[in-house]
Length: 272
Ligand SMILES: Nc1ncnc2c1ncn2[C@@H]1O[C@H](COP(=O)(O)OP(=O)(O)O)[C@@H](O)[C@H]1O
Ligand SMILES: [Mg+2]
Image 1 (cartoon, rainbow, N blue to C red):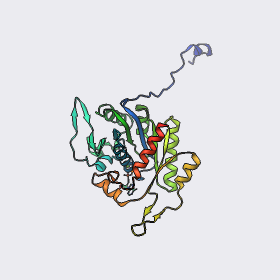
Image 2 (cartoon, helix red, strand yellow):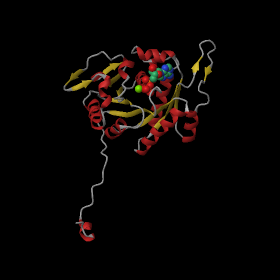
Image 3 (cartoon, rainbow, N blue to C red):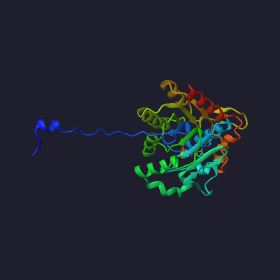
Image 4 (cartoon, rainbow, N blue to C red):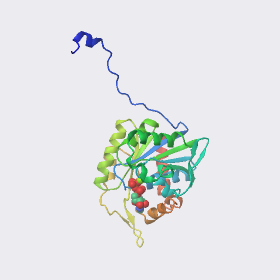
């Protein structure tokens, strides 16, 4: 039998579903998530080199590879075969080129995590944030997986993110998806610091001319229209790919200071 209207009105209202926000890393001054719509656009390359550039500028930097399904940081920093050290029941991050790094790829066989979903992902991320000796940091950088899934949600709930850097290649298809990611972050009140266009052009060895092989950049147009800062246009450089294969990020020797210029711009944007 159903309740009559007067006794139904006496019942307590159902509890509203609330999302709990925490800050699991209060020792980090600035927390920056590097995001993209698609995979393969250079998110890990940019997160890693940006982290090295910040360290070169004298900042204390941590880099967490939050791409549980496709970790790249151990390869880029050459830590893939190193043993994890635990001190006082906490993981000691790998310190390379002035950056403290940790990745799921350092803890388990990389392909083991491919079937993980919501709660497992959350537990793994919380451990890599809270149960790790990050210490005092000026910048904590997160290399996110592409898109808008469980990891992004977990991160937003677990850390006080200062801002997001969105990465896209010049083409429409990459941009359409990064705009969706930007929208998601704005919906959960995470500010967008700016956008980085990767693989913008390549410089000819013989004539030093810049070739914009993808034509007019859709990213530049979008950034202008949406009022989003264009933080960098990164060229296609063979050494950028090669250096990622041997654990020596390109930014260590970057003679054009591409990543240092980007780091200065980001630091300035966050200070404003
Ligand atoms: N600007 C660039 N110049 C040359 N190679 C690049 C550049 N950006 C990325 N790459 C290469 O492209 C591949 C994909 O980059 P990656 O950073 O792993 O992308 P994502 O993290 O978005 O999946 C890697 O082999 C990387 O070394
Ligand atoms: Mg990646």
